[in-house]
Every structure is written in C-alpha cells, then in structure tokens.
Length: 419
Ligand SMILES: NC(=[NH2+])NCCC[C@H](N)C(=O)O
Image 1 (spheres, rainbow, N blue to C red):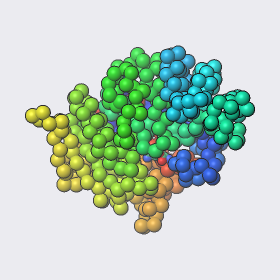
Image 2 (image 1 turned 90 degrees about the horizontal axis):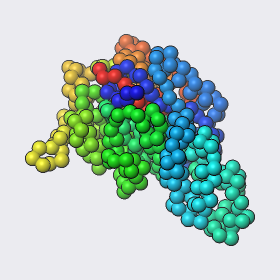
Image 3 (image 1 turned 45 degrees about the horizontal axis):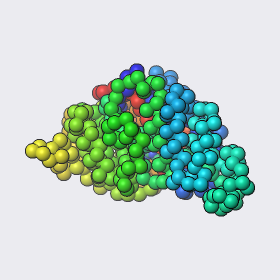
Image 4 (image 1 turned 60 degrees about the vertical axis):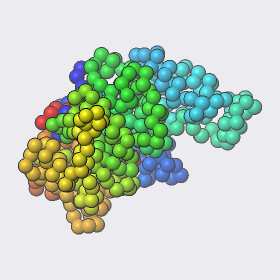
C-alpha cells in the first residue's frame, strides 16, 4: 500500500471518513456547545447524507476507508495497541485514580469492535456495568455521580471531521494535538490506526508530528498549550504547504511541522497564513479551498485581510529563513507556478455570502482537478463555480453541516496525486 498526499486537487485515490454514529446520538441541547456543534442532529438522516457523500466518491473511483472500521481492525490486530490505547484513554487524569484500574479492566474485556464503538461514541456509567454502589466508598468520582447516563468516557462527535485529528503532507502524516478539550482524545484513536493497523504497519511513511520515534507517537499530550488541526493544513503541491494560523493552530506548531518536513526534504516552503480567530472560520479550510490547478474558492471578508509569511530552510545554522509576502493569493500562485489564480468568491450579496460561508460554501473537497463535492444549499457559490467551468457534485448536508464542516473537513486523504 502506498500513502502520500501530494496536492490539494490532484486525483484523490484513498481517503478516510467517519460515518455518523453513537457519539452524535449523545448530543443534546445542553451539551452541544461544549462538544462544538451548533445544534443537535437527526442522526439517521446524517448517516443517509454521509452514505451519499461516500457513494459519490466511490463512483469516481476513490477508495474510501471508514475510521471506525480501521480502529476496530487496528485493535483486533494488536494486543499492544489495545493496551496502549486503553491506557491513554482511561488514565488517572481522564477517569480518575480510584476508578482507573476498573475502567481499564472492563475496556480490556470488550471485543475490539465494541471497544472502537465506545472509544468514539463514549461510554456511560450504565453501559460500563460499573457497580456505583460498591465504588461509592472508595471513589469520590463514583460518589459524585448522580446519574447512570453520565459518561465514563466522553463521546467524540467531532470524529466526523477526519481532516482535523490527523493530516497528510506529502509522504507523511501529522497526528494533531487539538485545541479544544472536547477533541483531544480523537488523536489517540487515529494514532492507534496509524501505528497498529496492518495496512499502515507494513507501509513506509513519515510521522511529521509527534516527533519521530515509535514511542513518541502517543505522546501528543506533551505539547504544552500548542495546537495544530488539519483543517488549517493544505499541501498544495510543488513542495509547499499552507498552514492557517487560526483559532486552532499556532506559529509554534507550524515551526515544529516545518522543521520535520524540511529535515526530510519533503517540502521546501511552508506558508503561515495569519488569519482572524473566530468560530465561524475556525480553520483555513472554512474560508479557502482549491478547486483546480489554478482555481480557488474563498470568503473575501476574511481572506482579504490575511497575511502570508513564508518559512524556508534556514542558512548558517538558523532554523528557518522567514519572509513576509506581499499578499496571500500571489504567494499561492507563485508556489503553484501559475501566472494567476482564478478566484471564485462566496456567492450572493453580503448576507448570502456570510450565510454560505457559515454553511461551508467555501469548504469543498476535490476528487480530481476541477471536480469538487459541495453542499447543495450553497446555491450562489455553486453557481459561480459552475460558471467558471468547475464540475460541482452536490450532496445534501442539512444534518452533517450542523457541526460546521463540509466535504473538506469530513475527509482525511491518505493518497492523492501530485499535479
Ligand atoms: N476542517 C474543519 N474546518 N473542520 C471543522 C471542524 C468543526 C468542529 N465542530 C470543530 O469545531 O472542531
């Protein structure tokens, strides 16, 4: 098996997605804000919409992998993987000192498919079978629990956005320390896939983050307060990677990734895109994605204000050579080696633009140059893309979009051609 993502719009060959499941059934009016969703979902409909999304990709020859299947297979393939994932997920700091042994033991007893279900979907006290009455005298946590629907393991509903927890840049992957606590555990699950799934165990690729070395692959807690999310990362081709400096990703993580890429000669330029921090555009890909070799879609109100700063390998012992660019679009054109970019802005008047950006109008995923998948509701933006000669395949997305993510966010490409 080969893996590697060599552009944003070259032919997509392999991709990982996540079908909505138990974690989304746990979203309620009282917890959806903390879990980074703007509403509760009708989960059956979200599954239907997601199945359509997957079908559109498969029709075009894309090999689609489901994250939960990969996780179950990784856990079945490796006892060590199972033990390590259980240890990091159920630790004294997540489930508490007094319960950690019991929780680990009951997770260990689960068969791998069921374990994968609960590592993503969460585990309630009732499902765990823990005897609260007995534990009450030894555990302050058990004593404080007043309801069997409380979680022993939290649900991870943002697993849906596979773009963010891990992301490929050229011949390697970064497993990302994420910004909000609600998403941190997602990275352990994907780390287990890359580390223990037979498909990856036999493949040859780099780990850009965490730092190289087998053991380090689980040490994503060791990042202080720095974070990086894949929604900010775009390996556009020609040895260049764009990384948004957004609500979610900081300059210090961009430097980590740039150093790793440069040290292997996997990239020669990383462009930090300095943007405003806001929930409506939490990642670069919510306001900018590529459509074709020389065409992009963007939300002007945010992208007109960004700064672009290029990092290249340093000389004379300096880690980097840093230059502030004149503007973002000419920097991307220069990196791609095209004279000028065709720019398709969010469609409609100022109100429609703001609404369509919110509904992921600019967050599309390319299947090959000039062919993208978009949510059908973004009619004004789609009309402009079609007028520019882009083939736009539409999917529903009324439920899927409630967490603020479109086709780009819901895909983690494993293999994509260069341009
Ligand atoms: N690549 C993206 N833009 N992902 C969107 C992530 C949305 C998710 N609810 C979050 O807030 O984290």
